[in-house]
Length: 111
Length: 113
View (tube, chains in turn red, cyan):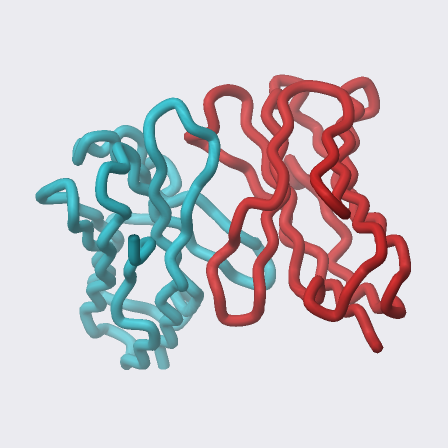
């Protein structure tokens, strides 16, 4: 069983929809949680970074961490075609040197 | 800043050949990471350096893989001899000490026939 599980999708939604992306994990030592966005044929880029449990909002993006359930989520409001990409969750126990990534969820936002 | 620069962007080679991938991290970044990405396994950390010194190479799959960082602005990942199962996208990433964000290059897509 993988340490981090993520539904690969693909997930297809209409423009303007609210998107929910999720990851579950098994290592209770994880404290740092990240979401990366990866466009086709590009490297991942950091989208959201949270420490421990709670919510963090940045524009149309909200990251949630529930450590008791070992579950993290990324919500995208008013989704746009430019949000079409693969979203990778990542986490680490300390500092961020050894990140464990999910396999990514492919999202397509259609006009 | 130009970001993390990787070369070559694409490499097609035959089984048994030596492959060398190159990376120039962002100037001033203390940490450099090599990752491999496949559909089945996602992004896997191979090795990382701090101030040019290898800190953790536990992700290097086998002795055919080696990595060096001779100075702060250059690193190589070498596969010798290459095998078809090494086909993947190899990413280099860098960051500053104390910061969480990793900056990735655009990757080197390797195909071993």
